[in-house]
Length: 106
Image (cartoon, rainbow, N blue to C red):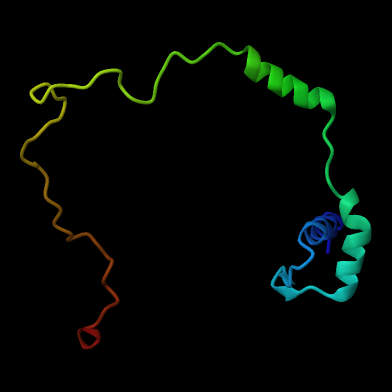
């Protein structure tokens, strides 16, 4: 197993000490002990400047001028829908979806 995989495994076991299965295998006692010793050191720490730049970009951005819903409701007669007859009908003659089904399978 790779170094990153083991590091992440110890990190998960450190935060979830009562976990019984991980990676579809039971957690061994030595893995659990190693996680208690090394797990707290496995967290990735980001630089403070990286975090503040992202937060500053979000804080300094202008407020959005849009809303997810329209500002007013439409009247019953004022709609933008369309209704009409369908000009194309699917016949299915070029479909090969059931070509392997025999009569005795039905």
